[in-house]
Image 1 (tube, one colour):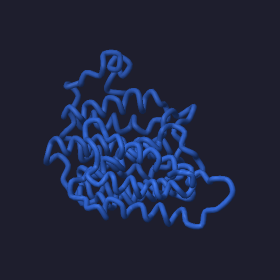
Image 2 (cartoon, helix red, strand yellow):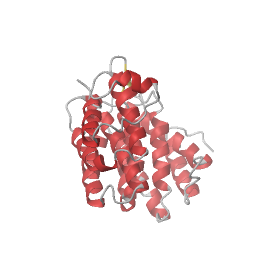
Image 3 (cartoon, rainbow, N blue to C red):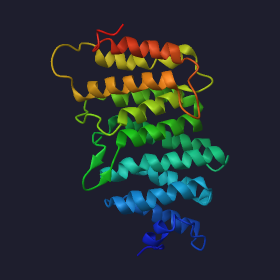
Amino acid sequence: MTLIDWQSTAAHDFPFPSSIPTTQLADELSAMLVSPDPEVRDDHAYTAAARWIREGHLDGALPDLGNTAAARLAHPEIQARTFAPLALRCVLARGQSAPGTVPQPTAERWYAAFAAWYPAERDTRGWDDSLGWLHAVAHGADAAAAFAEALPARRTDLLDLCAHRMTAPHADYRYAQLEDARLARALTRILLGPDLTAPQSTDWLTVVRKALEGGGPGPVPPWAFNTFATLQSLHLHLTRGLVEEGIPAHAPAIAAEVASILRLPYGWLA
């Protein structure tokens, strides 16, 4: 049994059910975020959680929501793992707008779980006809950008983490649902850190260069395709910038390094 008539709540644009205790509501949302039914998990639970967290209705339950999400990064079911970073993104973003709701040691603990999961996840499908959106790469990218805001000292670690994700050799799925753009957007947001030096802004590309060493003739493996697609998207993001956040301070230097890597497969580039 559920505490809320979710069909009615969705039909009325998710008004907050103030009569329900926050802890009970948070527990129900967390349980729904594991559901294999995309309507329950995505259309109802995630849509409601994202709005109610952003609006501050669940401030008292943020640590519990984050703890549950971090633990689910090791869940046996893929939809549970891939919606966990979305929950973390929401909680971390609210923590930035409401200081004190997410203590830094708690965010660090969540980061450790996230860092262990993100590059290692093997099921990176964007969409499943039964489960709906999974999007491990895109959802993880969104969480990475949120961690960069919550834990600015982790920005260089997060750049390396994203590089290891895009070059993960075990990948057998080629990005088909704009995962490259979501990852490029996250990288751009991380690179917007005001304290990053020029070397710190480009050193992470060493991970990419090392992964591509030894490549030669033959079919392009999925991980290499994903890497080239992400770098192309990143170059565009660095050139155009983000609507609300602008362009990273060291964008020209980063873009030049990215272009030099892209000349490996595209030798005709000027």
